[in-house]
Length: 242
Image 1 (tube, one colour):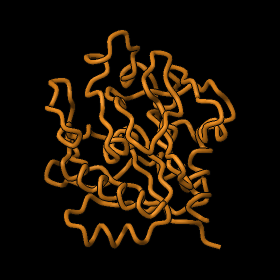
Image 2 (cartoon, helix red, strand yellow):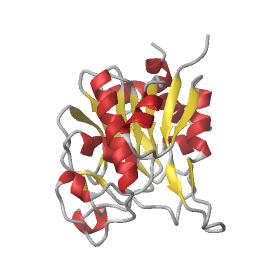
Image 3 (cartoon, helix red, strand yellow):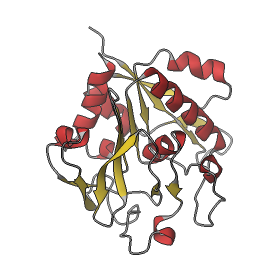
């Protein structure tokens, strides 16, 4: 029996060595983690217009929202902070549409890094545009320059009895960390599933949903070596195959 099809949203990649050949693509670690879970990854390009995007959406059984650029603050009613990073209006448009369709259809969804942020925004929540500038006393969360992609940077406290706690089997989980933004006001319909020791929200999950999970770290980079990270993708595939 064929496994479920998991849609993975592309990023708009402009290679430094060939500026005349922009491309849509995604990090291989997402694709490998989904494939290890027994599902078929399907890359979703950033297509303007509802019809082609809806055609792809109707073919997938589950949705994975990966990391990437910052969500435009106008999507949650704020002006752009001077510490806000690169923005892609087209990616916002594509992912907001996919999320709202998936939530309406109860289609399983796993949101990673930018993914948890755009998920929260799509449902009416807001973001810290820059943790260091806007959260006094916050620890370091942007460890791009100091840590390998698969290296844990800090622990998160997982909420007991949450879906996440069931999946990872622990209430204290070491995670990697490559973000400068985070969930601020949690959207209606989502509950907090984990926090860093400084209080920054690190995971949310959907209330009364078959499978809606957002995490701020990058489990795809740890999944090959850490079964707890791989379980998130396994759970997405399992829910998508029902």
